[in-house]
Length: 500
Image (cartoon, rainbow, N blue to C red; front, side, top):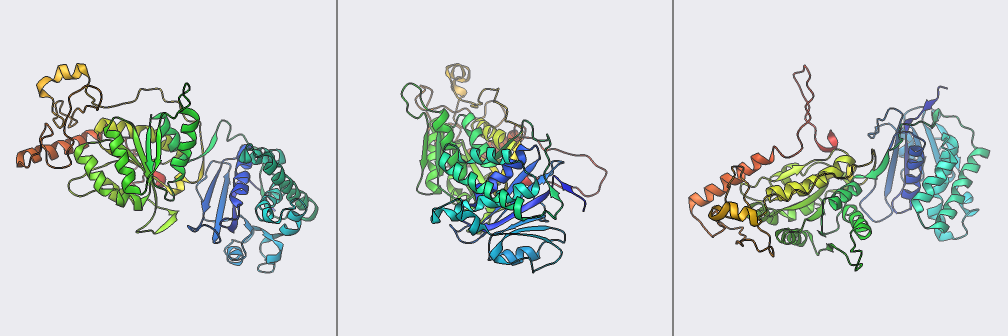
């Protein structure tokens, strides 16, 4: 039997709400800590608990960590899907399963490892209610023994996962060792899959896209966040709450220097964002497709009244409620033209966690430079899964607040200034911020002339929409540029976001 070293996928089939995510992240991080490139993909139902969920760890010595179709090592813990999961495997694969499921008679071309999880967990956990959660760590222990994952790395990953919860970490460490001991004594390895130490992850980090975006938003200077919970975007503002509490508190008073509000719905969220941005704050919201639909009218107001703001759209499958826990890129067209009339929005599309971080910062600069909403078009696959990355660069350039009136620009512009007047030929007017002593203006979503006065004159309307179109053309020179790979071919592929 030829060994397969550091090039396989593990699929862990459990039940949603069973506490398996902790064990799954421990196995992922342990392999990563051994220097092997990895990624983790969670496929879970949109209900609270009880339906099947699958977590896939891909390890690849060459750094290919996109999810692959084939499963090499199955951990079957869910009676509902176990038979189907086993029957879908290619010959020569391995199955670790809960012994009462009796799976080994299903096929003769697979390697089966039956484990009596309930019996083992009873020896390490006296609390019957906790056993359901703790027994997940037993399959981590078995895998560590069968695959050759170093126990020291397993413990390091486990204790990182539990943080300051020492008692919980100790209890789960007992389960981990019990699983490893059982495998060493009772299971003979008959499959080719092995983990061996490498150095391909030195200096790398593991992070979710939503967490990376939250970091980027904080470094971009966001001070107002209004959001309404929706899968798969909620973890972005939730992560941001943690970072802001840690790094954005006034040292002298102990008070927050920011406001994060869970609004009553998505419409209220975007309304709060635009109000805060109009007043001069850097403000954002985070949502998904259904929320984007609800924000349409306010997006049009922001476009025509020229108010900045940032919307993170963590895309999922639609239409309507659709499949909330499945990934998609189906909001691109709707976001690009969100609202009625001649509305043209600015979109940035991250393809990696590094770009989630960088484009979050870019979005705030673009929003204030062009005085309109900017959409960061991430998706569930990127946002809610763990990805490898080099550490993010600390920002080294000042914030771009765009064309904001100050005393010098007022003196320079003089009577030429009008809130909606293009004085420099790029379509971008100057704005003033309340409370700064600069000239005031009417903010209008209705027809207006260059000075912000109400107007239904055809020439005023034409001048305004032509300027907005010119501003959109200017924006094309500021957004991240496409990557073009030249080749002698008649057919080419255009990819964006996580499709790239």
